[in-house]
Length: 229
Image 1 (cartoon, rainbow, N blue to C red):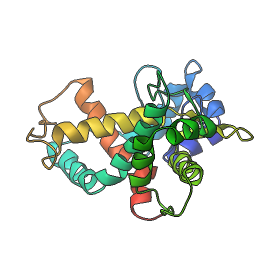
Image 2 (tube, helix red, strand yellow):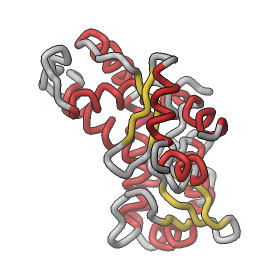
Image 3 (cartoon, rainbow, N blue to C red):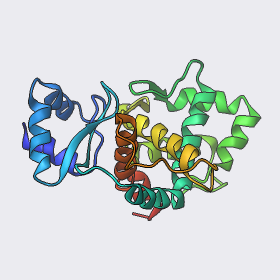
Image 4 (cartoon, one colour):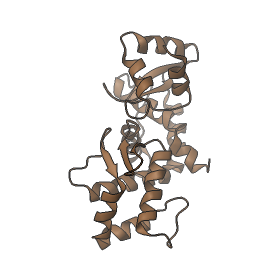
């Protein structure tokens, strides 16, 4: 296990083949993931993964109580506007690209999106309604879209695939975004009447996975952005 791989994980990154190809290749080698997991246990952490072939990330080792999950859930409720903005950005991309699913590995090109936006006044309105940090109404559609894509890149959801053509690729972290938003919709009182599941009583992998996602979200780029960092 390379020290760089552990450092990448401990920095709070979501390690996928697009954003961190070398670290990802290291972790998928036979036995390397187990070594990383054993090392992380000394820090009361463990190696978690989004699905069977998704991004790796660091999660708490202990089983979460309902009280612990409730606390993180409350924190996420305060920052759901940040996650909502990111989802709105990705949704705008979806509306400009036929067949776009917003999954890891898909490509996004500024020029292609700009062409579609300029052809549709509804898309222009949606773009200008986005609360993109550092943007204002005086900017052109091209400049607003560039800031939008750069924001998604800064948050870890895109990586630059071709700088000369301003083409980006979606990273594995997007799966985490979708999962967190789904959790909020299903469990946050302000968004739904559904009660928080009893983590003490739940013993299946889905419940543990939800707690992992919430804990990871509390330290990811979305929350940092909400705090102005």
